[in-house]
Length: 133
Image (cartoon, one colour):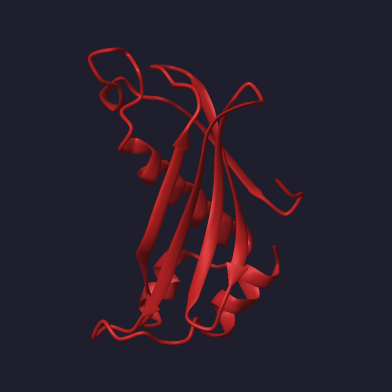
């Protein structure tokens, strides 16, 4: 992944694991969201401010490739970058790593909506944050 990627690290919590001791697969989508929020924050844009400005980012597509399981108490890193930035949508690519080893990869396409649920342009702040990657 490129140098412009954002990275954030945290430990897998017990509540995020299943009976087999692996991180539950559904958590990866939430971890990708953590990565996106931190990506924007590092570029000077809090997601709270995006919503306060009347723009909502709704998940349009989500794909995950699971390569190796994360387990309770693993220190994992979520690496996030913008793959594509359109007029009203943005595509993020993610990697989940443990000690430099890629455990999962993913892609999330977000559609920008106004408060009524209609597609709208990303706006200058989002475009600038995405272009900084």
